[in-house]
Image (cartoon, rainbow, N blue to C red; front, top):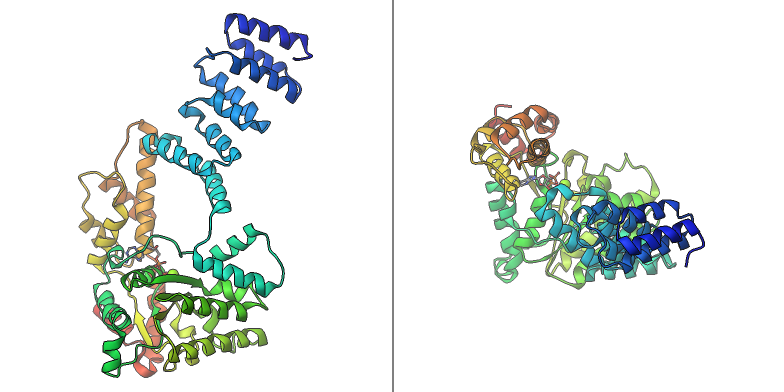
Length: 455
Ligand SMILES: Nc1ncnc2c1ncn2[C@@H]1O[C@H](COP(=O)(O)OP(=O)(O)O)[C@@H](O)[C@H]1O
Ligand SMILES: [Mg+2]
């Protein structure tokens, strides 16, 4: 079957003796895919293929490189150390779900085999397959019509995913948001209850219409709260990163916006969330161009339309820069209610620490109160970063010692040294607005917060 007499002799000797060093030599001599396949065939024909993972690896990798996924799988057997080859081979055969579960099961058991590159490839394969959620289909179809050209399905899905990054994710509720007790109470009273009991509110002639604008320093849970609010309302959550609308789709942005609003109306109850609104709502002089102005007009017209017919749709937005939001956005029926989302206080920081530590191996010596006391000024995102940094330290120790070191107090303390609080800068800016530009009392909550914290 092979032209090269040296390879033929080695394979014959292997068939006789079962000594797989002969296979390794034969593979080393092979110059063409045909010769390599002959070596692999001889290996597969021998039931007693050695348990030596290195030989298996060499042969399986060679099969994989030639695209012979099934041969690669057969050669790799169940060896954990050949996880990458087995996963790649499964992906090559289109068994994405199996590749994913094999990978997950293996690293759950033996985290040492974790492989970020491999993970990326699984994710890539998964998203190439993923059937988009219904609202994304609606959007994708609209987008296709609007562009007047067929985009590849893959591109389409990527665009839709970028647009609705959080649709289809796990439903969140207030239990997922640490601290912010007062804010949650306010949201419940001002947003969730009216949304769930529109008839009662109508009776008292309280309109439930208009949007709510969440504002506060970055990383303090605005996006998280919006998502949790949708969960509390038992509504579909449609997350629209405003920057995607503004930046990526110049020319078609207006129609894309209209399609998003229409989608929210079509399948209520839903929460339409415009994240980082300042990208759109920036003072008009800053965006002194026609296309931006027409986008703003479209947005406002859609919102005004909602003020008339908002059955089952709630509009939320968030911004780190409320002072950059044009007053036109704050008129009645638009974002006429604002909600300050402050940095977490000490109790909140302890809760957020607990939320982010949960589910990781952790030691009995953890004193989260002590860490909370030392992390004034940390945002929720800063705390998440702190816990990740501490986890990295524990992983480093685990890799060094070969014994699993749980997340311990010393890791958190060291992580405190390596990370820093990011909310102070925002508060400094906000203080000036609260002092000098607080017409209509829109920064009263900020002023109260600053005062309560001696800032
Ligand atoms: N109150 C909180 N409870 C739990 N995690 C939080 C909280 N605030 C922030 N985080 C963490 O920080 C990340 C960023 O928060 P995010 O809601 O995106 O902040 P913002 O939208 O205000 O910039 C969240 O994904 C979450 O992991
Ligand atoms: Mg955000």
